[in-house]
Amino acid sequence: MSERKLASLDLGDDLQKEIKNANLKTVEDVLSKSFLQLMTILHLSADETEDLIIQLSKECLPPCQKGAELLEKKLTSLPFCDPELDSLLQGGAPGVGKTQFSYQLAVNCLRCSSPPNGVCFLDTELCFKADRVNEIIEGSLEAECDSSIMSKFHVFQVETVASFNEILSTLELFCIVNDIGLVIVDSIASLIRKEFSQDTKFERASTLASWAAQLKELADITLYFYCY
Image 1 (cartoon, rainbow, N blue to C red):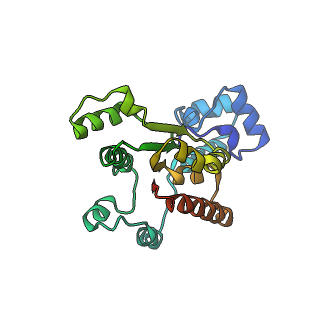
Image 2: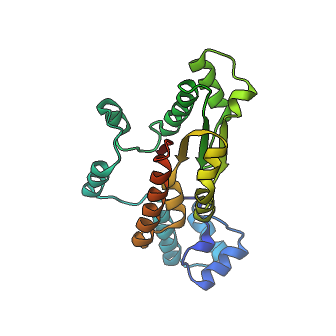
Image 3: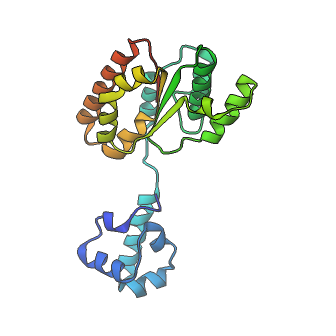
């Protein structure tokens, strides 16, 4: 939050001009200055400086959520139908190991098919770690990982909704040609957060429904999907 660009905030034209002249780029740049420094370099009164600090401090705060909203999210999260696993994941909160779990699923796909099926990994957060997959393969298959095994992983780095739609349009053919047995999307939520605001609930729901329909259709062709 503190890395948010000042130019994207509604601070008024005059203040934005002063901020630009002072070479301040982010919220952190302003809040790291002392009260007196801000008054001096931005040519503000004490009251104006205080108002600015309060406004920018609020930009650094995570959005407040009500308990009822958190409960609703928990109740509507997609379960794995394994009570112990669902209890641990708690609906898929950040940092609980969803990506690591997807790596293990991918390795299981290789281990449980003969010859090994391919794995298609749609990486929307640009965080695919080939070295970690390599470690899991060596630990699970009890064999040294070579290029022939890693070549079974097909990783697409997807940064926009448009690029995701483009990949979906050709995914069936890609899966058939490359003998794909598992498709992993890490993560659909990331794309939605990046391109849809809270005020576009209808568009978000429509996009998710369209993706779900396309992925389900592909899953019916004996593919497996893991999306979160």
